[in-house]
Image (cartoon, rainbow, N blue to C red; front, side, top):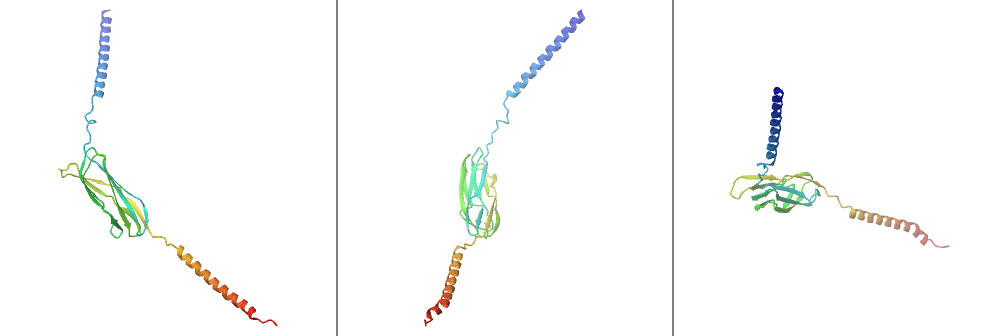
Length: 201
């Protein structure tokens, strides 16, 4: 009887210890989940420039022009300083540029956008790629550490202009009608004139 009672007390202690261990484990897991993470509170304090290049036409005729528009947006959380935009287009016998392809800004604040355009004239036939533009910037106006951002590239097709044949067709038609009129007049005079000159008996 005593042995059975002692065995039941031991089983009760084991059960109580097991339940206590489960409660402690649950409490600790809740505390860990509730504690704030140090990594999630760290914010990005650097500037980040996003550069896009668009054109109003992707296919132009020879010696015609198209407009290139550049957008620079600071999507970071701090100001970008000493921003320099450089766009190196193809060889000068391929494109002629009217406007600035190198522009500098003292700063671009977060969520601020700079937009500008320039005009490009196609001087050569073929399919060409407008290379990516480059933007250099610094995280401070007192540091030499330089960052670099690139824009997208674009494809441009330069084709030969179709000849306007409307005037040439009109001249050809007028010439053809004049020839027909002259031939008709000659034939009329040839067959009608002898009858008119014939005397009645």
